[in-house]
Image (cartoon, rainbow, N blue to C red; front, side, top):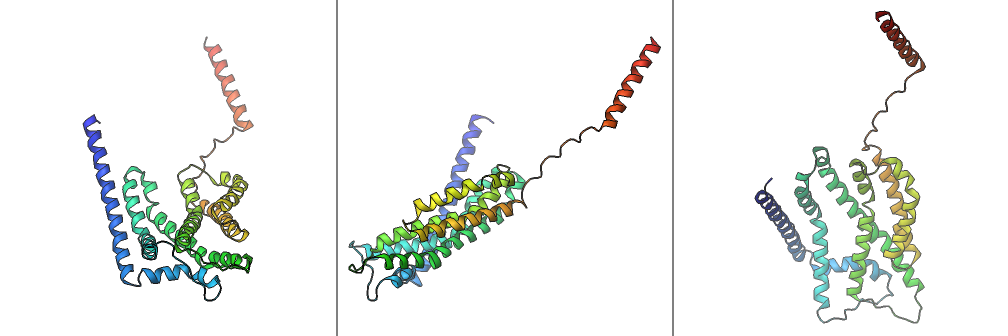
Length: 273
């Protein structure tokens, strides 16, 4: 391929990347517009803040310190929800960009990969919202001194929620990552079994770094990661590549037969001479 053709190919890839990014942004904007009309940014934030407000003392509400915070934070929450809703389409655009550079057997992973990764990411966020938040906020409320009145800031709460959602969403992608690595031949089931202990230690380290400094949230992230690792190992058995068959070892009778043939050939040569 000439230098001119390489430059044209590079430019065409950039144009395709730009188009797919624009489509993804348009999809997010359309979904966000629909959510802004119904149920509205305020209602979406109230739903997101429900686990915390239920753990606060009766009559206590969250506070907004900034001047425009009551306007901007609900919009940011609406944009986050719009991104999650449009996530399957975004992943489809990303796969459409990288798929032409893959082999045929790798391209067949496209649809199952998009569906499974989206479902697991949503499952991780749901687990975090419906189970982890309630346990963590009630633990903090019971641990806090009775002499103070908690009044969390809505911006700090949004930052906390986004961090937790991202952590649990990515943690629930462990089975997908393992299956893809095994399918591509980077790892195999035996190596996954050997690395189980290292993954467990790593899961607890990640949970200690990402989650708040309480035992409840750390265990709520580390234990599912370990269970999902086992699920990934189990699923990898169905996609692992078969090992190349080893050459059968020569039996003793085969060796003796070869020796007799060599001796007969040597004797024939001597008679001929």
